[in-house]
Length: 135
Image (tube, rainbow, N blue to C red; front, side):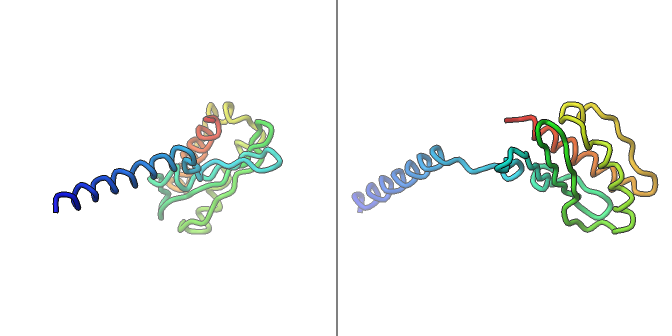
């Protein structure tokens, strides 16, 4: 009986060590930042901003940066009211053409009538730009 317990513990230790070695050699990729073949950095704020909510829930974004310039910011699927959310997305244009560093310094006001949604979008952009600047 004692030999079986010792063998089980040894086997468990071996499995844990093998898992740790496999993880150390292939760490999981961060889904929030990918680099495309043309050098464009793509930031997805879905996992970065899980706790950032507009009026009806999360408001994730996709931010594209090429040659250190923000070229596009697109909303990802969300549960916001379409009319109010469309108004809120007007804030996204303010970052286009800036560097991530410039974008982080930018002071942007919420859109009147779509305050919750626009504030959530602003927080998503800031978190995305901070992620873009990390290696």
